[in-house]
Length: 224
Ligand SMILES: [Zn+2]
Image 1 (cartoon, protein in one colour):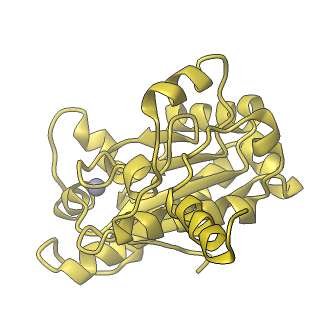
Image 2: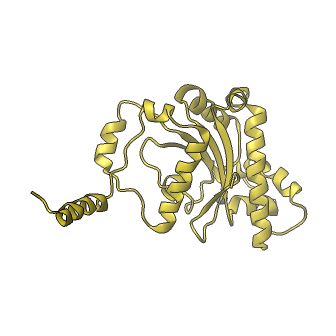
Image 3: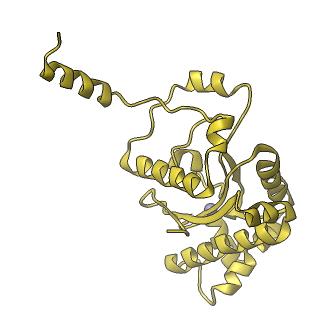
């Protein structure tokens, strides 16, 4: 017979071992709503900021996801090496689609990828996440002009215009343009994809914006 103190010690010992993260299944994906999915991202970012990411068994996760994927979110974010969403939101294999392009701009290829994520795979949320001190935003403010980058930066021009006058040396201005740019990308997604728009209007899928702070590691979502 175990004494009460021994039982308590056992309970605490079990509770102290962090549970392994589980990969997504058709059922776990179907059980989510856009709001619950956003909560998962917020919780993941809180773990990242606290330096306490989920414990994962990568070899087991590779095996468990090999037969199919049931990610719950598609995230459009910048290519910036300091802003990988899988890491800063503590997401695992099979949890999210990561669509990365300088300045988190929207083009036909990104729209097509989002349509696949929504219509074929069944994600519950689309997020556009910009970040502070974005080099692409600075380039758009400065009118950088070379190669194919010129055409890419044109996608950020509306956010620069909407932010009024300013320079790329002014950090607050750069971040203001980046925030405008997130809103612009969100509008583009809604306006330019009938497939995504229908999914948003049905309420099955949500659309949220966010900003990643490269100094604190925190992502602030626009629904906050
Ligand atoms: Zn950037």
